[in-house]
Amino acid sequence: LMLQGVGERPAAAFARGANVQRLRYAYTLLGGALVGFGGAAFSLSVKLGWSYHHTQGFGWIALAIVIFGGWHPVRGAFGAYLFGALQTLGSQLQSTFTSVPIQIFQVAPFALMIVVLLVTNNEGLDRLLAYLPRDTARLISRIIRGRAPAALGTNFQQE
View 1 (spheres, rainbow, N blue to C red):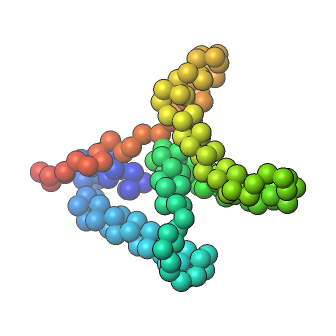
View 2: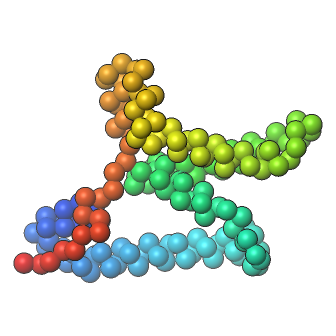
View 3: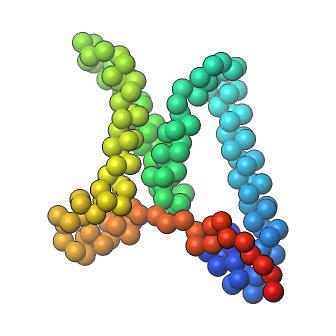
């Protein structure tokens, strides 16, 4: 709750007794450490060693998942599982459709993530939601759209 308070309304978090600057640095360090652990796990267990083009474009997929998640961890996890399911499905379909070139199945998850980003952006989503009843469109819009923390990138001066 304090994390959300520091990101949305740092003055309110400060009024509740939080050291806003210290918490911002601590959360930034924690996020960086988690990213570092993720990178170490990837290079030590998923793809051993190091090579040129080591991540094979998965950094772009990670960025797409963050955008798809819209600053919401549950949506981000859903996006990661969706991409993993698409990759697994592509691997399974390779043995079923042997006449289709293997490169199609390797590229399909990336292309589908681009389609998902196009659909979930503001303009594309507005076009799709225009065909739905107003209450349903409002509910779907609230679920899908995410917004950055209100105080992101702002400097907080304690008074």
